[in-house]
Image 1: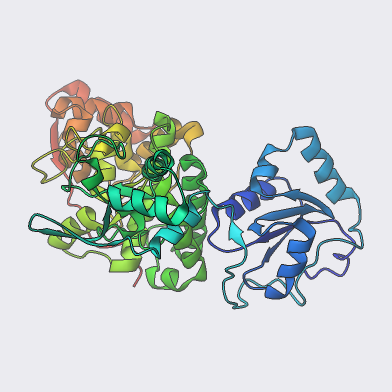
Image 2: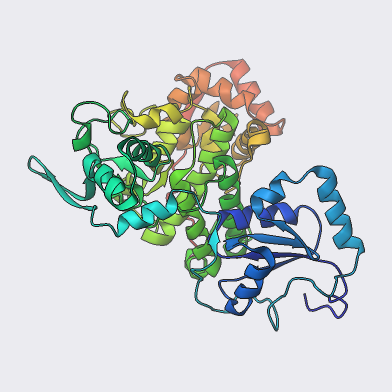
Length: 492
């Protein structure tokens, strides 16, 4: 950015703050256009706030300028007609920067200048966010008793309706509609075990008694709880790709040359990890039910792999069987108003609600709302894409909905090509496979015979495949399983 001639060249200026998904999305879009982008964090540069407000008339971010032309926010950028966008890109590439271009901070645009985050500029906020903010300070939320149970940080439907009528001046019908909207947009959830659970607000005879909680007060210790997702939601599939890009950048800085071990300590100290955590809060209210099968696969595989990393950074890597069991059943995110643990994502969603290793029952019961998100059938290829933070797991890659099936196939081929995944011993007529095939045998057909034909079908053309074919043709193949390397993939 310090080029001597940079003052005369055109540029796109983006005013942003940290933790705002719309800013991240806008910068990703601009990054694909091949134009010089200057990103100015108004949280760190308070001296520019008044000028930005004056130029744009807005106090939401991002605010985007092509040279001195104000395009608006992320929504405005995404809605630009292709020919208009082309005109703006040409303008920046070919015209010098006019003298009335929007201001940059003095000195350089370094990432690391500390500054107080700014309360004045906000992300494109959801219309209910401010109401929820007021509710938190409105003496409505408290401890409620139902029988012998005490529900902390909760409130009844009646209390909410009264508060909306008295403090917000709403009529009863409007107050009931607002309660329904808060439920639908996942700002609040009904408290399990405290009354009706049908997802409608204020109907039925005892409905006013039903208890609710703000989603951010969820007691399940999800790693992205404790703060409200106030930004207007961006599509789930896009959010998972933004999170994936952030984790990938973090990984590339802290990954060993062979791609198998990670410096978690260095990673958790990296300021980019804080930015990742801020963005993960936005998962709380994403809409999952409209995702296609491919979007679901990519979304949940990417989220699983990032959640394992987040869990390792927060809790340390599990080192024995008991810790591993706890880790996979405990480490969780709030996604679309529900808690999903690693176990829920793997066995509940991606394996079509099948029992996991050492599980006595399926993850989701018939009435569990998360069942609507589960894939209709187990997808065996996910086992080569989920990274569980141990050395025996597949190396970390990430996935996009566009060609998820071919990406998963390539991951399976690579896994089987490696001797950690599959060893073919022609002399002994024996095939030694990763424990993954033993644990999830049901996903690969359920019998040794079906398992072997699945493996053969998913191998790339190689000498190993030829020898496996040779053994299978000769008949009577012995199947055994390789010891699993549970040592963590931490480099410290």
